Amino acid sequence: MPKKITLLGSTGSIGTQSLDVIRAQGYEVFGLSAHSRTDLLLRQIETFHPKVVCVTDPDAAGRLEGALAGRAGAPVLLRGAEGLRQLAAMDGPDVVLNSVVGIAGLGASLAAIENGHDLALANKESLVTGGHLVTQAVARHGVKLLPVDSEHSAIFQCLQDAHSARSLTKILLTASGGPFFGMKADQLRGKTKEDALRHPNWNMGAKITIDSATLMNKGLELIEAVWLFGLPPEKIQIVVQRQSIIHSAVQFSDHSIIAQLGVPDMRIPIQYALTWPERGGPVAPELDFAALKVLTFDVADEETFRCLAACKKAIAKGGLGPCAANGANEEAVKLFLEDKIGFLDIGRLVEAVVDSDAFGGSYDLADVYQCDRMARAFVHSHL
Image (cartoon, rainbow, N blue to C red; front, side, top):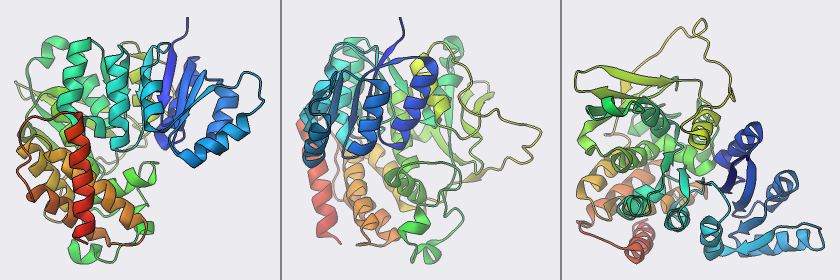
């Protein structure tokens, strides 16, 4: 029997590439979700025939309901954040792949785990905002948490020798450096959203592309790596690898290093999360070493790119510090994309909210959402 997959965030960049992998593997789609892109979701429904779909935007849900009216075999339509959690929890799929962007994915991740589903996680904010809650739920319910981000997938692949993994001493988390690598604050002051959206290597959605330009994405990935692999933040080194060929590496007690390489194509880590512990066939071009002349390495400039510095402060503070950083960043990026603040304001606002409180201590899900609201309000009060 082919695997059945529920895909959350099916109309985004990761979602559409995930469907490429699902098609290539001959898997079935149990459920799909989208926020508002009902035109694309409707085409996906016609191609993959899911039993259930969810649309989180109320107006878009109404549009899809009208488009599906009277269609034979139309899927069940769920709505809103609660509908997303219901879809994630439903019996039927073998794996839930969460590619929702932002803290909106946290509730769905927990719902999937708590209902016994293995979770392929592309929504890094689930671990950034609620890492304690997610990892405890995974342990309690005995499910698998499979990383989809290219960097975390690379680390996961390098640690498949369980005996060697026990001697892990360091993670080398790679970064492309984004479109503004090497620039200083004076050069960044006038950068527009059009400038920031020109990523040199990866095809991603707007929010993640801006996060790459500010290095916030790498800060979030550092926090995610702490939760996934159990190393303290000081044992995770960020290395700029401009060609995005080395996706990350691990160092062991004898100082030997194992790295995972490949072309910059998200279908490779997506497929590994869905086929693990097996490997599927080729879904991306082969890495051509005859054409690969140069691999370069550098250090990340957190003095200029303050989002990265803020994330390091946040994970050091612990508790809800990473949640506050994430909430402030999501709101600041939204304002930047609306041309309401400048590029450098994103880092300024994220760092300011992290500096505003100690944030330590235990928390529950309600505390996470309250902290997120506080961080967004903080951004608007400090424009």
